Amino acid sequence: MLCDFVKTTKMLLGLQREYNGGKYHPDVGATALDLAEGIGSLLSKAPDRLFGLKIDRLGSVVQASKYESELRALHERIKNIYE
Image 1: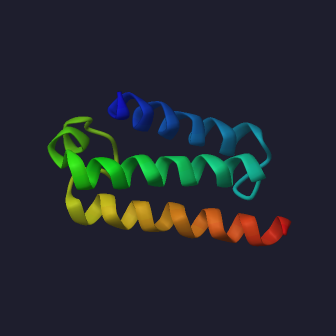
Image 2: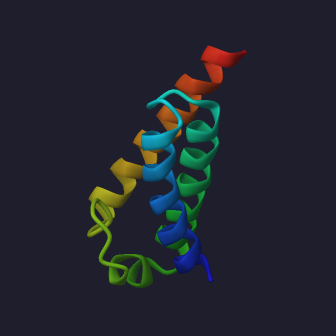
C-alpha cells in the first residue's frame, strides 16, 4: 500500500508542478512532504520494495535519501513563503 502511495504521490507532484503555476504553490509543498514521508518510511522499513518501484531518483539508499531531503527542503521553502 505504501508503495502505491509513493508512486501516486510522485505522479501527483509532477502534475501539480505543471498545472498549479510552478514550483512554489502550497499544494506542491504539501505533496512534497507527503512524498518525503512515504520515501522515508519505505527506506526504513522496506528499502527493497522502494527500489523495486523503479522510480527515477529512488534507485539506491543514497539517491532516495537525497531526494527525500530535497522534498523536505522544498516543503519548508514553500511553507515559509506562505507564513
